Amino acid sequence: MTGAANVDAAEIAKFDAAASRWWDPEGEFRPLHDLNPPRLDYIEARAGLAGRRVLDVGCGGGLLAEGMARRGAKVTGIDLAPGALEVARLHALEAGISVDYRQIAVEDFAATERNQFDLVTCLEMLEHVPDPAKVIHGLAELVRPGGDVVCSTINRNPKAFALAIVGAEYLLRLLPAGTHQYARLIKPSELAGWGREAGLSVTDLAGLTYEPLSRKARVSADTSVNYLIHFRRPESGTAA
Image 1: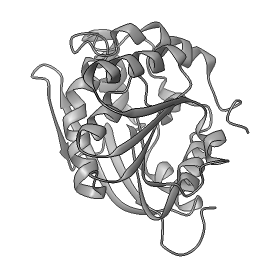
Image 2 (image 1 turned 90 degrees about the vertical axis):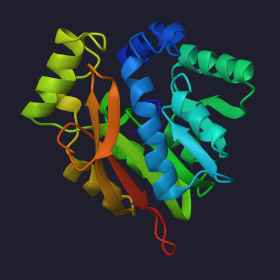
Image 3 (image 1 turned 60 degrees about the horizontal axis):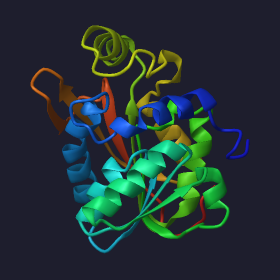
């Protein structure tokens, strides 16, 4: 499966349609705005940011990419949604933040940029692609030996369905209905397995707890709904 094939056109269109509202903290991306500070803190604590060459895969409108750049990283962001990328570029320009945004699939980017990044992030994207395992292989190829990969996604179980889909999308309307499909949610064991198959080692698994009414988000031990996983590529050997 090539990078072009590992794309859901409906997902791209969905995020492009909302691109102009990406930076509105009260809009449909409100949960991402609330989750971003603890996500950044986790990434910085686990892998470091200052002075590191970082790739953000599935960067969307640039919320995480800009945050990492503000903490001293040299950031490249890739995505396939042209509208979201344009918003990301304009916001970075207005904010005086330097981020290199490119419209390309991770699998295709890995063909020319293998081993080039100290840290690769892929947050809240894996559940939106047809073959997430293929994406993980791309991440493993892009990170240098000894480098770090951090991903986040949503667990697949009844609690996650109740909170992340029914509650967030249909009851509280924090996200547009249809944002997530239950069948595409990913168990931590599945994600860890794909990482190992790609030549990565799991170094940490943490929950990302979100209280929508108080808008409080924190890293926790509860991985039953949202979670983060930190991989490291061994110094020796090559990515599978």
